[in-house]
Length: 334
Image 1 (tube, rainbow, N blue to C red):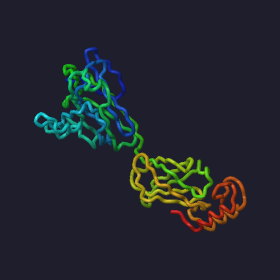
Image 2: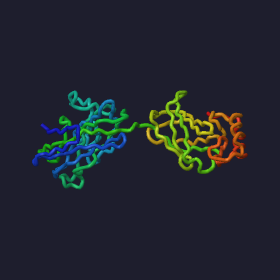
Image 3: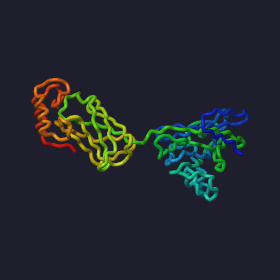
């Protein structure tokens, strides 16, 4: 019977000198998990892998990629016609293989577990062949979905599918595969772009807060408040917004609200169009009217920082500000 090392914490296992050891490890980058292998204290190399890879519910494995090209033979699905390989198949074993009893193979992609079969075949043969796989390296990567906080990954030998086989089949290796838990940040949209605040004195945009509202129809999904950098650039990471199509509204202190309609957001980076906000909404009501004119008139010809009516923010309320308000008088935001 194969010796199976399956533990749920990082544990050093010291094998007897006569036994070969193969370590299987995982690392995560976002929702992509890389599976690596290493043969320890043994000149033999791994000829084939038969592994079960499982994730805790409700997580699912929905893709396998970055396959090690040295392990290009997939015994569970390879098609050989007249002695020639007609189709190398897929490394994910078919759970409905008529030769497999129930429970011997994981359900497959878009479930909580997959069974992997990957073998090497090369010429010239022998561990010293330049075409042989390395004693360590990346075996594959897989993608995890339906997980927003963290997930435990368990990898074990599938002895029915051969387990881990060395080039010397007489050696039955101990396989160490610590359970691995990774923390996965929510796969949410990250917004980025530039906001134009009309008539603002150059450089004054730096440090200014813009309110971003994300709507699904008439329902407000989330409000973000990024701080602008030079040139009006910003980034804002969503918290509750999931990928989809939304209306996104931008508002700043004395500028009218501007809507970007039908914006498709994906998980990760989203470069948005540049909204250009009209100036003159002194009281922030999203309409430029006599109330705004009254506030400007009250402070007309006054100087200072943060004066109501100082629309271009040059620290004086003057005819330039009056001209801005007059140009946009009676206009309303989205």
